[in-house]
Length: 91
Image (cartoon, rainbow, N blue to C red; front, side, top):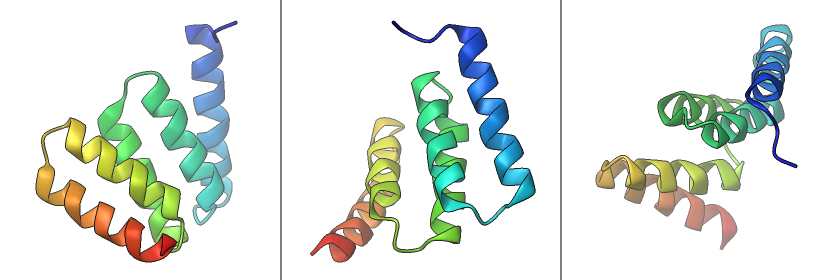
C-alpha cells in the first residue's frame, strides 16, 4: 500500500524535527532527502542530500543520489562531480 499524502507529510515532519534536534544527523538528512524525492520535491531533496554529506562526507549513497538528481535537473557538471566523488568512495 502506498503512503497517503498525509502520511508523507507526517514523515517529512518527523525527519525535520529530528534534524532540528540534531542538525548533524546524516541519517535523518538522508532519509528526509529520500522522502522528499518520493513526493517530487527534487530541489528540497538536493538540499537534504547536501546536508547529509556535510554531516557525513563518506556517505556514498548520498553522492550517488545527488548525481542522479543533478542529471535529472539538467545540471550535468554537478552530476559528474558528485558521481566522481561517489566512485572514489566505493572503489
